[in-house]
Length: 423
Image (spheres, rainbow, N blue to C red):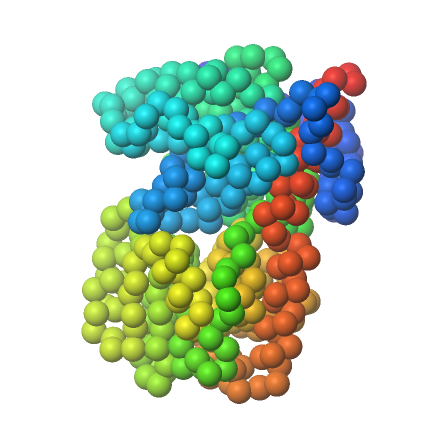
């Protein structure tokens, strides 16, 4: 691939940093969060052609199929599966492209057409990129969509963008998953090829979606790309969290990777022998770091390593814990935050997306391990706990239900398509 091909498209730099902007054939259309959530995004009527949306979520098969054990654990996979179902209920024709994991070429789950692309492990290294491109583009052709959406920085961002350029009527929407996707001169990955493919793809997106103002500003500053702020959804958790009666039960959910710092949980457990720390999650791939965390956890009696859990199992864990603890260095807008808020569980955390937790009273924010420990020990015993629990439920219900988020995306897609047609 030549250097010229990978050069970023020229972009209009005139928009303000704090204004959500979408690009369509050079036409920039401002859309506020309130407008996106409004009822004017009506469902498709019988006289209209349904909007056809294809979501590329390669690791989403287990999530959309309802498999009891998930091969890939992560917020992206959860969010894309929920968005697919939500858009289908909004009246869109929705397809989801996943890895080939031995399933049939085409399946239907809750009205969503699932198409397989390529195997995550098949092919000869350094050569398999060509077969992967061919199989992904073949699946995109079968989807025959108006909108193609992909989330999370990586080489697939460029692959999907190229696939959209094969047909002029296709629109490419890219969603930022983490703050790391928009930091640094290029963002995304430590691997040069993935960085180039990511930059190629994001510069050819017809619409870029950020989850927070921080992401929006960083993306504009680092790459000169404007974006629309729209947060993702989470499924409402059944029942209520354990509350103060479970003050000695603390939950941590995530992948076993350095940026999420599960090793902090182990150290906190050593320093708080009276508290049981429940760790739900896996590494998704083998690493020395994950192996060490898992090995060290075996020697700490008040740490429970649950691994990857099914949705019913995770719900039971939510109902038996008092607090969720987040030790991450960086995130996007974690799905797990939304899930625990929906059942009234406050969060003690080192990461606060756009200051939402501090501003709305959804938990407490810490800057060190010592502060986290102090908050874990004291918060369940205070009157503030009940206020935070109530505020957490309210925040989720008013902002992050699947229906509300799907409606915002549907409206954004409709505006994007109208912008193209009006040129």
